[in-house]
Image 1 (cartoon, one colour):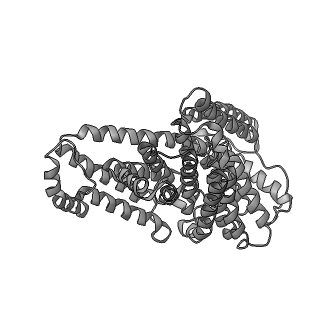
Image 2 (cartoon, one colour):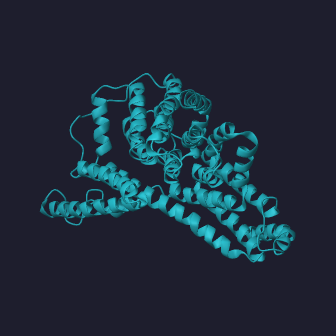
Image 3 (cartoon, one colour):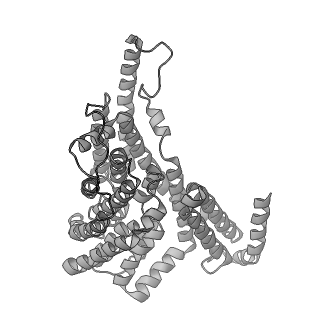
Length: 466
């Protein structure tokens, strides 16, 4: 009842403004109590997300509520203005963006869970430990792999894979896991910035026809600097020892593990091919790849059930689902809190953009402050707000800029999200995957080092491409 009373009070407070809204079919909410309330709701929700580690409130909960409240306020204002059809179209547009991201992530997470269950990453951990690598060497190996793989796969999928390796290899050292996750986020975001397939923002710029395909690769050196500077600084904070050696170096990967790895690579190739050659959204390629896994999972399940029936080691009726492959159990183990958090962020930010705040911010930056400063600030903003709507706002504004400035905003939007753990999809996903080790506050402690790499990459870009 308290929540209902609070909502009723808020609506009464907004009532004078809503009466004004009914005077015309095109309400402007930027300087309206509804707009101010929407900003307040979003800020409060993000503060709760940042305090997740302290208050133990799952990050998806405040963002889901915030998204709903923002669109309720907007819908009421527009309905009283006689323009509620615009709100419905905007919500459907934002929800479609989320749906593509949701299914893309769900397929990636399902594959990773399947590989975990088959012992793929345990086998990789044993192989790395068998090489005698220390924590510092493993830190660089996983970071470099994240930087090199993300231009081909997307930065989110790359980060999830490398995080699984880190959790398997160095799970006995929380400091190593935390620093390695930060390094992976920075490396994956930096690697994705110089390839049209590495990040959604680069894909948006390429699809818009702003820059030709080959021009993105001129961002390779700036992206490398962005990765190397904070990695070099974090190197000295790493433990000097080695992970505990496994009791055995025997093969632990279960039947079908390597085939699932191959299917995952084939799924990524399918997604890229759908986009590159057929101009179909990559999520359709990922869903097709889920079909690969489901078909192979059917074969694995029948095979393992047959072996259970033929085995006398376990009494009948004592079949463990952990021993028989079940594709739906891997889907169920996806990071649902992370997926719902993405829904809240995309819908809430979409609401603020619909009100007009993102467009107003873009106009102020490019109109008053100039493209260089504006593009640098885009990266900073993308650390606080999802970079997709920020880049969408920039593309909608379509300011007159030379190509090197478009490359600059592509770079900053891609790597700026590394400044905070909540600034990129990779960071948010890893907070869920490495829960308890990699947190918002653990990342925040190294934000100055990441910011130094951010500024250095901008300097390198202006020096060689400007």
